[in-house]
Amino acid sequence: MPRQPKAAKDPNAPKRPLSTFFLFSQDERPKIKKDNPSLSVAEIAKVIGERWRGIGEDAKRKYEERAKTEKARYEKEMVDYKASK
Image 1 (cartoon, helix red, strand yellow):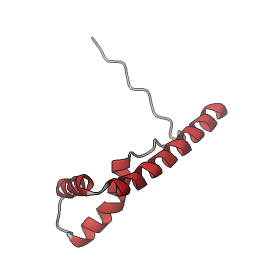
Image 2: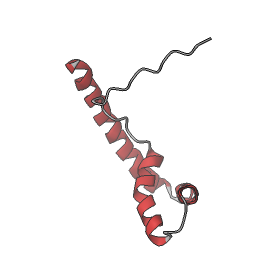
Image 3: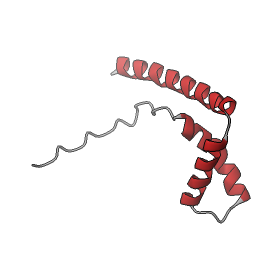
């Protein structure tokens, strides 16, 4: 059975919000690359994952708050975007 072609994404649509882990990754990746410039992308990802598992609840809560803020921004932008169509 032939597949339906994928609908083209609208370049004007708002970007989806990042998850708590990806917000953490954004902060940690530059630090890790600075300290270990020879690591590959996969190795950096492993280090980020280890650090994520090792941080405390207070630090995770900071990222959860940022994720909530990002999600609220995204939802508001989506409402505005859909209204403008």
